[in-house]
Length: 335
Image (cartoon, rainbow, N blue to C red; front, side, top):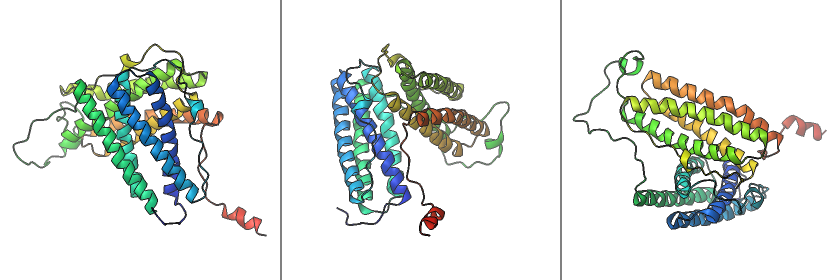
C-alpha cells in the first residue's frame, strides 16, 4: 500500500475519473448480459469481468477517499433495465468484450505511464494484468467456437529489403504497390472496431427513447458505413479477407436495456477511440492514398462530435472535469 499522500496530478485526475465512469458503465452492461445470456462460456466470462470491475471500483473509491476527492456519480442501477429482453446475441457480447478489452489494454498502459503516485501505478499495473487475463479468456472462447477471425496472413520474405524509391510512398495513380503488413494489419484492426461500433449503434438506434439521440445514432451509422466501405475495399483490392459485420447479431428488441445517457456516452467513447486508432494507423502508413483515406475518416468522425456534445450537455449527462484555478479570481477574493 502506498504511503504517498501527494495531491493528484491533472493526468491522474483525468484518468481516474474516466476509469470510474468506464467501470460503472461496464458493471451496468455486464449485469444486463448476465440477465440475458444463455451460453455458459460467455456467461462465465462476463461473471469474471463483473467481478474485476467491482474490485477496480472499490480501489478507485479508496484512492478518491484517501485524497478527499469527490467520488464521481458515474452510472448506477438507474442506467440499466435488467428486465429488458436481449438486444444482441450471445456471440455479439463476446466480440464486444474482446474489443473493449483491447481498448482497456491501451488505456491502462497510457494511464500507468503518466501516473506518479505509487498506489495509482500499482492500480493500473494490476488493471493491465486483469485485462490481459480477460483477453486470453476471450481468445480461448473464440478459438473453441471456431469463430475467431485472424488478420490476413502474408508470405514469409526471402530476404531483408530496403525502400529505394519514393514511389513507394507517393505513387497515387495507376497500379499502386501492394499493402505492406503494417498497413493491411491496421486496416483489418480498425475494421474489427468499426463493425462492433456499427452493431452497437444499430442496436441502440432501435431502443433509444429521445428523438435527438435516435437521430444522432442514425447519422452515426451513415458515417460508420462510409468508413467501413472505404477500408473494406482496400483489402478486397488486394484479395485479402475482411472481418464479417455483426449486423445480423442485433435482435429485433425495441425495449431499451440501457438509459439514453449510458448509450450516448458509450458511443461517444467509440467515436474518440475511432479517431485515435485512425490517427495511429495514418502515421504508420507509407502509401499516400491511405493517409488521405484516414484523414477523410477522421474528419467524417469529427463532424459528428458537435451534435454529440449538444445532446449530452443539454441533458446534463456529462460530469465536469476539475478546472484550473482562476488566479485572477483568487486575487480578487483576497482583497
